[in-house]
Image (tube, rainbow, N blue to C red; front, side, top):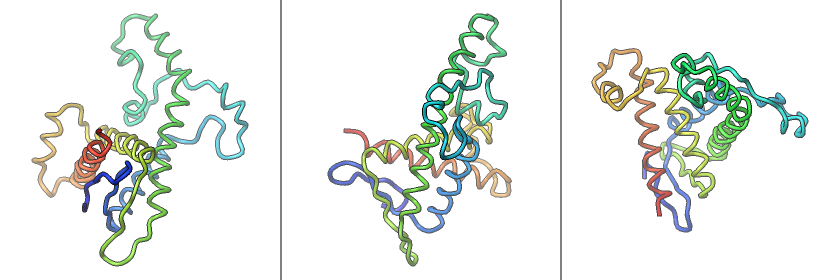
Length: 196
């Protein structure tokens, strides 16, 4: 089970994680939360009714990671020649991005909470058990983490991923590459546990 999700009876998944793996996953999830930012109402205590009617941004984010997490509805706005499509895309973003951000925040927060609930002891690590709903949240968060890292590594296609395997150990991107590949393995095995 080490490093690979396995199905558990009754649905859900389990994985054995050591202290370093828990620390890495938690750190990445917290960084994702910081990148996504707070909701439209800010922190706790915000007016839920105001949040319901809050409009999101109409312009794409400037950070390439956020562009990857919240892509334009009709492709790259600079590549779209039609002003009407650009307007549709801006409207789509304005009415959907806040909800997309909220969902991504909820998924990343679910990862942090489940990792914080683990009791780590000794060299054995701990078994993280997820319900089917938690598994789906983890899957969403793992996907977002991989997209974020892929953006920083300029991974766009499968060929780009293949090049990562050939990086020398001295390359400064190597730790990020190792995290990207490890998260991919976690994601793949988690998907397999969700299949009927």
